Picture 1 (cartoon, one colour):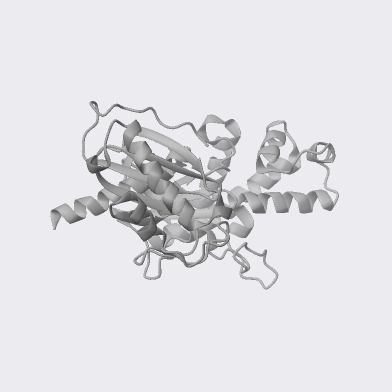
Picture 2 (cartoon, rainbow, N blue to C red):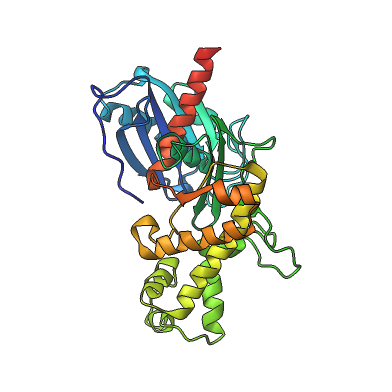
Amino acid sequence: MSDPRPFITAAEARPPFFAGIDLGGTNIKLGVVDDLGRPLSWLSIPTDVERGPEDAARRMGESVRRAAEQAGLSMADLAGIGLGSPGGMDIPSGMLTTVINLTGWDNFPIRDRVSHYCGMPVTFENDANAAAYGEYWVGSGRDFQSMVLLTLGTGIGCGIILGDLVVQGAHSHGGEAGHVIIDPSPDARMCGCGWRGHLEAYASATAVIRRTQEALDAGRPSSLSARVAAGEELTPKLVAEEAERGDSLSNQIISETARYLGIGTVSVMHVVDPAVVLLGGAMTFGGRESSLGRRFLADVDAVVRQLARPVLARDTVLDFATLGGDAGYIGAAGVARLAFKSRTRS
């Protein structure tokens, strides 16, 4: 996770103020931002999944109060609170439905329970959508009117922003680009969701590990073999390190990942026609700060230019996200701001 963005003081800030909550499987990140998306405070608490969703909702409410105090504000100074959550959900009703990495949290009214402990309404959003809105508001997407964010990690998350519209879909499943089908064959790779052929099954961190392990098991020569034999865990980071040292298999795995991601990206582009597509998450192979990351982006871009319709291939910008681990809570605060602006206009 990246370090939090530099804080401003309440005296420097432009009101109104908004709190954002980014609920994750391991940690919950919270912060308060001003009307320009600049953070005044930030904190992180463990999710402690085994303690259950009611306990987490209580601790989120308490932590919002702490974040407001750290910012030199009271709860009365907050114009809105936003909550971004992973998993299956019914956004209009504020319900978590099925959550793979939050065992025992199914069918929980998380929005209303967090609202109860905060003492004010909470705006509920999918975590990928919240992160996308953060990038659109104050990150790499801030100069564009429409944007797609693909987050590369254990799975592949996606958020789509069109103007100030966060695409949720009729069934709270909008933007699930990780489940775009890129291989329709009956023996296609199995996705974590239980279906075959999805982009996530080929280009997520989980897929990179699986594809690399299969190659090693098949006897492919690689400097990875010695490191794994010595007890190191096979991870995309390990693959990236050996790729930077010139290992042929590691470079091939990353190049193939870029191709799969490019195919999926083109499918989304043809539906949405965004001004910019951003890549974020934990698996960007160093991002723009790394020669390997820049090469990865260039490889994805080459596939996009090859397969996309001419105007999209020419004009769509492909870049890295910039907010890192801050995107979730800033974006959650941002969607609360959207709700506030909508209420005050009506």
